[in-house]
Length: 194
Image (cartoon, rainbow, N blue to C red):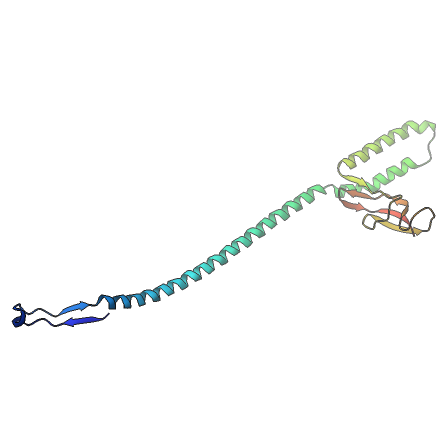
């Protein structure tokens, strides 16, 4: 701050008593120096504000990433639970497939006579009921004969050259294949035309 000192006036000049020295402050000089201090503080404050804003943005981004990760986790957990529920019966189905095959073989055997006809019809009804129960839980037979070979659902165990069939067409089914809803639990074993 600039200060200007004024000497007191002489008693003889004004007829007053001499005054003490008075300090007069130049208002313009004070504004210059205080504005320089304020500019320094303002730039320091501005730097702090920018730093805090950068930190805030960083934390907001982290929160958004954590929220997105959590949402993805929830969706993944939900889809895993749905898949587990959808295919919960797969081990049981896989265990029952050999029983189903043997049941069908027993019904296809030729040792029937007239006296066994009632027993045969009863066994056939039980077989159909068994198949319907499995189908109601999502078991599907994989179509084979006359179909084009698909390595995703068929397993070729023989390749033959037979007339009347196109190349890569299934000629004969050797063992039935099954799907549980959309998942193949046993591919069909087939004979394919070359």
